[in-house]
Length: 299
Image (tube, rainbow, N blue to C red):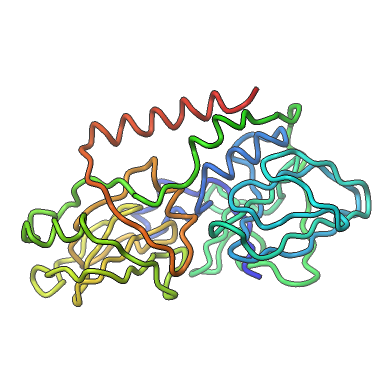
């Protein structure tokens, strides 16, 4: 089991060497929270590839959002993307993923943990934040928060389909795109890459067409952004993700646009991914369209 407490992350601390962490699929977390009546940034449980069993001694209202982990309450299947009520003493169970990488268990009132730098998110590599700075284990007891909530909501299915994860990720030029030969840039966008087993919340290593790396894949370290695609020596790209290092010394050929970062969070080992080059204007339009869709998501 690799389940952690996550919210929308802690931004603004890059100069101190602290990456944002937070939900790998923030769209799923936001929607799940709205389904149960929370503010969209409330802390929830992020489950990766495999779920677990969660006993609710006092009952509660929950929603499962993201990839389908086959949820059930006391053995009775329950739907994804729907607010469900548990009576006192009932158990919610989730199994292995049936689709993408991550599922979010959102609980009405949110998960109550001590905030670190204004966020409840677990930063695995440093052991900070969340519940004791680590993934959950058997017999852990989590408290449900007392946050102000509204009535649970219902999703419009036709809109939900429009925010489904993408397998063709849109990317803008990176800071060092012009260091790469035109042939390498063309090869990057024309090729298909596979997510390797050596991938985690810090970064996703890709296997596919090797790229010619300028300066043997090294450069003076500089700040790096969420979604940057760096190419170290050997030519195999790496997508920097929510627990990325805040500085890096590898040239960056591209950067995943903000609207497609949630799709990165749903990539599993052995999934295939491709890239599509877009200009900054298209990236801005995509995030505006995504936010418009989210506002139209609920009936």
